[in-house]
Each structure stands twice: as C-alpha cells, then as structure tokens.
Length: 300
Image (cartoon, rainbow, N blue to C red; front, side, top):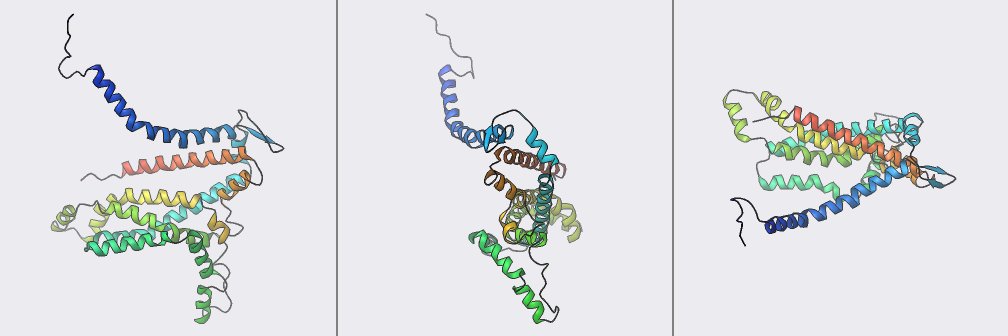
C-alpha cells in the first residue's frame, strides 16, 4: 500500500469537509432566516397577486390583471403618486432640518460629553409614542391650537386659520418632525468620516470655509444625505397614521388603501399587487441612490 502525500498547500478531504461544515454552521441560520422571512413572504405575495377574488373566494391563477388595475384604474395610481410626493417632501424637509444639526455636532462640538448629550437629545423623541407626537401637532395646528391662539393674541389674524390642519402640509410637517432623527444620525455618521487633516491642509493652502464646505465636506456627506433621504422617504411613503390624524381628504395614502383591501374588501390579490409595486419602487429607489453614491464618491 502506498501513501500519497498531499501536495504543498493542498488540504486533505477531511479538512475540506470540516471547513464546509463550519461554513454551513455560520451561514445556515442567516440563510434560513432570509428564506423564511424574505423569500416565503414574497412568494406568498406573488401567489396572491396573480390570482383573483370572486364573491370573497380566492381563486389561484396566473394573470396580470391586478397589476393592470394598479397602473390604470383610479384611485390606485393616483394615490401611489401622492404617497411618493409626500414621501419625497418629507425626505427633503428632513434633510434640510437635519444637515445643520449634524454639521454642528460633527465640527463645532469638541467635547465628547457634549456630543453624546446632543446624540441622546436627537434620539429622545423616539422614546415617545408615535401617536403622542402626531397628536401633539394636531393640538398645535388646530383652530384652537397653540399656533392659532398665538397669532390671535398678537393681533395678526382675526379668526382662527383652518389651512394649518387636515391637509398635505400638516402631514409633511408631522412626518418631518417624527422622522428627522433618522436623517440626523445618517448625515452625522458620514460627516464624522471627514478627515480632519484634509480640512487643515485646505486651510493652510488658503481655502475659505465656503470652499472647504463645497469641495470637501458636502461631497463626502452625500452618502449620508442619500441614506437619510431613502429612510425618511420610505417611512413617509408607507405611513398611514399621520394621514388618519392630521391629513384630509386629499391626503389618503397607499398604505391605507392596502389595509382596506386586505381587511374590509377582502381583495388580497389587488392588495398583494400593490405591495409588489411598492417593493419594486423601493428597489428602484435603492438602485438610484446606490448609483448616485458611486457617481459622487470622493476619493481622498
């Protein structure tokens, strides 16, 4: 019997088997989680979206009729566009509010304790209930709310203003307040990565603060802006509680329609089709954000 030695650097079959088992040990649970909570739900959505409902009875099938309804029939396409508009306005307003605060935390707070305190204050609103924060804005913007009472006391108006509440303006304002912390933390995390030695070198070479911001800080912060924008857009797009509390007849969101289709109307195929359309829009948004991030990436 001849013993064949393994070539230098070549692993024995038992070593390869052990490595494969170790790899499956670590990858098995995440893959199982991904399959159960991602692949299976998406498969269920596709199964229902391709079927139909007749007298509250679901019939499986392979039809694109539900997707055609979403694209051509009112109010589905209109409400999707309205939800996207409100989500976009929420993302823009959140970024405008969040950027100065994140910039101040990153470059004008030298003490670690003060920075940690500001960090906690940014997260503090998350400790309060969503409903409490939404009702707070309803109290502020109402005809007998703080804003109207203040304007009346100052003599700026004679009667309470009604356009502050129950419209898209009040929805965007409420959603901006609730979701701005996500934008602050995303932008701040990116601004922290700005190399201080690069800023010092730019100042030594005579660059003004405006030039440093435009040519160094702003380009580097773009990924944080995009991340915060994607998060706040997605949350605003899919919100339905603010629409019920501070929105009006022109503020119905697509999430509210999906809830009605899945519940009262029992039209699961149409609701599933809308869900898949929303998932497709989210995937397109993430792809666009990833493309913009690579196009605007700054290499130092």
